[in-house]
Image 1 (cartoon, one colour):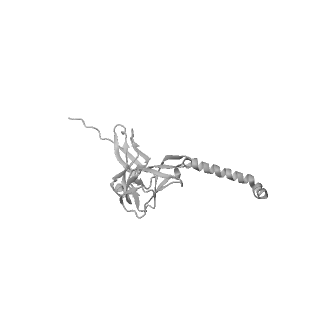
Image 2: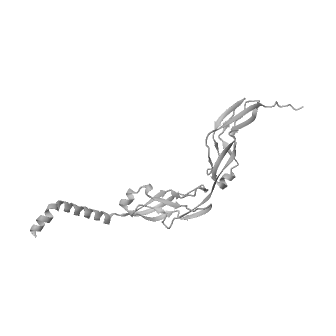
Image 3: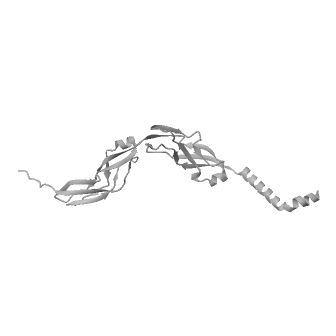
Length: 226
């Protein structure tokens, strides 16, 4: 027995003792690691969106996901470790409600449990993407010099292409330029301005500045009453 102990145990006794201490420490850490909870706010990720569709809802909610698990994992948690993945394959235009309570769309690190998702459902609309050309309206402000008035306003190019969800694009009457101030003007003035539309879901496909030319003319003299 003493010979077995001397030949088999003593040569690696220090290493064996260190391994045993490490195993005990690991076991103690797992057993005594308290359970913690944390709330993480994450965006919703949409995947496989059909190329001819766009989201036509202005507001897309962010999710608050409550997670529970060992404190050591909670403390190492990064916001990018948790996300909601919505698959939009075969989606058609119209309104759609997504249910997140099943948990299949929520991704979190191993060892953590999803306790609650707020909101558990969300409702958004989808529409066909279209493009069309609309006139550009120059927004002229200020008053010309005394005795003058605006004779003509020329916008170059006169039209611009917009793109977005069909219902929103169809409702746009025209695009508008940033303000053009003609205060005190007496002759011809040119300005470079951007054109925009007020609907946030409609985009200008070519956002380059347009040229606005304002031409003044003499106002007719006022006639006095007889």
